[in-house]
Length: 369
Image (cartoon, rainbow, N blue to C red; front, side, top):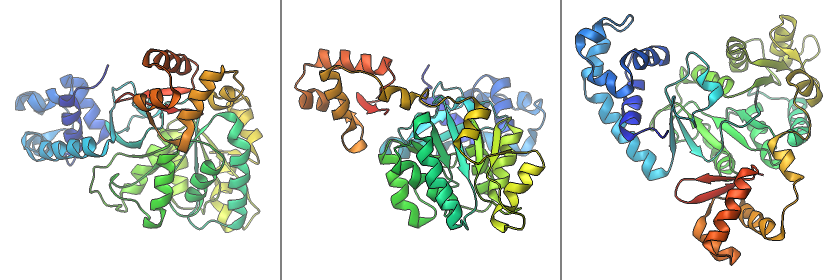
């Protein structure tokens, strides 16, 4: 069931009230019935909710957060970005299971966040040549597993993960610590654009205008862990964001992997610590991932579709959908294919059932392979 604009408005507003974090917000929604009901609830009833208090109730009754949410909805509509309320079917199911999941997340791009396999790959900003070579080789080996890769768009390991995923045709998602209206670091603006244009997405829990403040990055790291089946740490010192992400993954009962290094190798000290403290599985190749997660090669959605036999006309339609890795309009597909609307629609439905095509809002379609 699609979330109403009223529910989304009040969910965004609730998420912006100081002192009401994701856990308390979910508690309020559960007890009141909906985000909208929270704002309509009487003061006496709100006072009875443990952990709320008079200052937070005063903030709920203020119009400031609602005005901010109204402005954000206008930005979303203007830029065709997506907002996922936590009870939406499209909200990432893995993230929903985390007790501190945000009640709303924002998405730029059309990536499906509920794919069957999702792997976060993180590590140091000060990446070594060895780390870069490992990621490039690993992503090359990962292509036949039908995996969505997730990272944080930072310098070093993150950026290499996104570039290697793009190079190998792996759909990928960048989770950021700021609003979707900006890119940090700025030098990764083109990389972020490439991720979106290739069918991936940029994801954030922060409203437009939010700067990449220091305190936002641990919050970003929990989203990276929450979106994934497993987290792989390629390189990390004994302290840093990658180990925070690994800790969140362990807290969320996700599998964690780390690439080992030689004793005394600073760039691997965090990885070795995770392994020897039994907080991560040792990983040397994609085969270790396959063994622990039971991910059979060639069984992922992307790998399976490559082997399908299509009719000539279906293949022509797939080829049209794949042009320039962009979303295609239904009318354009009818014109380009020289087929009637009813025939194009029936073929698109068949391709959707086979997992090759995803329908989008506004009679648009995206190829999934």
